Amino acid sequence: MYSSSPFLFWTIIAVVLSHPTTPEHLVQFNQIRESFLAQLGTEILRPPLPLQTIQALTYLIVWPFPAEQQIYDPSWLYCGTAVNAALYMGLQHSKPAGNLRSIGLATIENFVRSYPIPSEFAYQIMVQHTLAKFTTIVLENSQEIVSHSLVKLIDTELDGLKSRFPTPWTPRVEMAVLVAKIHLYTMTIIRMQLDLTSREILMKSGFSVALRIVYLSDQGLGFRSSDYGDLAPEVLQRTLPKNYFRALVLATVFLLRFFVLNIHASPEEQELARNHVAMAQRYLKAGSKGPADEKFRAARLLEALSRQQPVDLDTTKLRIDDRMGASLVYDAITTGQELRGAKPEIEEEGAEHHAENHISNHVAEPRQHEGGPSTMPLIQEPPPDMAVDVSNMGAFAGLDFSLPEDLWGDSVWGMFDTIAPSHAEHMQGQPIARYQ
Image (cartoon, rainbow, N blue to C red; front, side, top):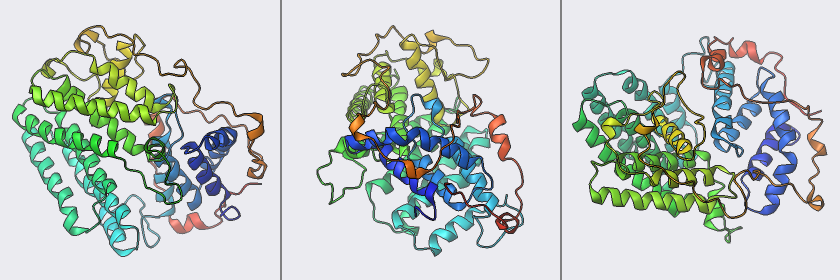
């Protein structure tokens, strides 16, 4: 692989080192990080992207590098680049296609049934396939009663995958279904303002799903290796795709907003939700490597939010309500920053902030993580005797690969709104990315 696809080779190395299971991995990642990111910036700006670069981007999307703040996580930008490059090459078709906008969901299902891919991975693909079929319909429908009926239909479709695609029911397979459902429920609940009965039913369904997500996360989702049987659960936690981290945070924020901090929830529901929020906090702190990493920041956020007093949800509106389920997380982050006296980083442009609608009473700053202040760098400087020889990586250019401010706006995603030439035209004279 090093000879045929050097960039893919170094991407795999960098991804493994960035999710360390030993202290040496962390030191080695620090040695290659800047050089690798510089080369990454060069590779993805050199169209058309070869297949190996698209594959490397998918690894970075699933296992992104640590980020000082979530707004600096470029996963979505990589995702757009990878999808656009794949369409450009016509990878969604078995034969070269004339119109690369015609992505058929039936093609995905046919691919899963026709090719010998691992059953667990195939099931996860079909979960996303099912959600993709209906998400747009749910979002574009303004009738709350119809939305509830659609959610029940999608629920049935997701549960029916067990019979259509028989697969060993591993925790990761179950987690894929649960994550799809929590996104489905939240994107519908936050848009329901009149049909309170349907909203209450969906909240109950989301309650059981969120509890299960927290429980499965705490029990462990990582693969156990016979070669490294002595790895602690908190170390294995660091090797998981980031999607599990996002799902856990969303599920816990859901429990906080709709049950722990909801005056209309029953005492039993509040207590059960509070126990699982505490479980999520312990899990995240255990997997944290220091007070500047994402997991510790998430645990600190949950701790701050948990200190608030219950409120009436009908009078407490979300600041951002057009980002599907992620709106809950964005609102929680902004509230947490206000509780700490920091300037909110996530807000709708032009929106007015009324902190009294979101903060019941003053909450003290949570205690710092043992080991230093919150400004501690993500990666420590390596000792001189543990240098890594990266001379074979080639001459990396000093490219400043900073992300645009308007990461979520049309100025970025508009670049992907063009019709690409055919696969045959693209493949003629296609350059292969190689290190010099």
